[in-house]
Length: 287
Image (cartoon, rainbow, N blue to C red; front, side, top):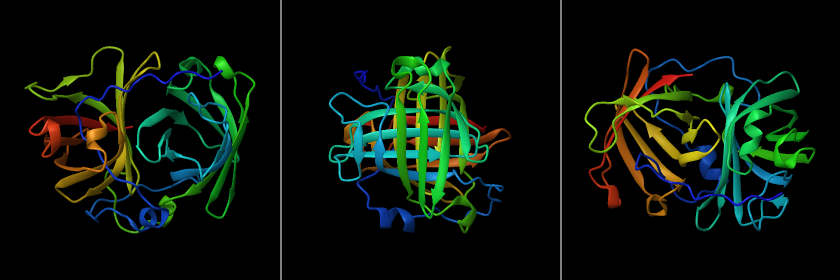
């Protein structure tokens, strides 16, 4: 069953980037900032781009047979404990769908526990178990969907790395990993407060990419952004690839950041475009 993807509502928060080629992604990296990197990486951690697939979930009008020559870019990101998947139009960068949650790699298997899923929100209640096989810089995911509107439908996806494995990265990446949004003070709000009841927020950083999400515990999406970033000891510059407000696509935004007793604080003002002067103040804790 194909579901209509509801429009994503952007909360004017950070985010950014422009079209990219694979060789550019592999060459990109953040600055060394003098903080010890995470250790004990697993083989799934990193950023992957879908190159061939038989999809179990599709957007309206999208074929279940996927190739890298299609007009869609599909990405999957694994940090140590969390995964996200997203698809956007290659030309317009309009988001076509996204989902994510937590996972555990157990040898050649990995169960996924879905927190939100724009293609089929009924899957939030059903853990999924897939197999993973690796060959060079390729990763193949196979399995059968359990529950939801596509119960029993098979899935096979072949991904290619667009960054080196985390274990081979040189330099320090203090923001790499998964972060839970504890509180924020957007716009004219003066004092940072926790998110409203029923709303969750998190942000993922790989060495090259970021992914930010607000979602409702019922599985619905509140806001989304995806792009690349560069971190120095004091500043965080994000460049938007796909986001709810397409006027931000391809633009870069720079904010200050600093470590706190629980994680890090990102703050500053949007310095470009229609949200010029809009305040950003967010407090994150490492998951």
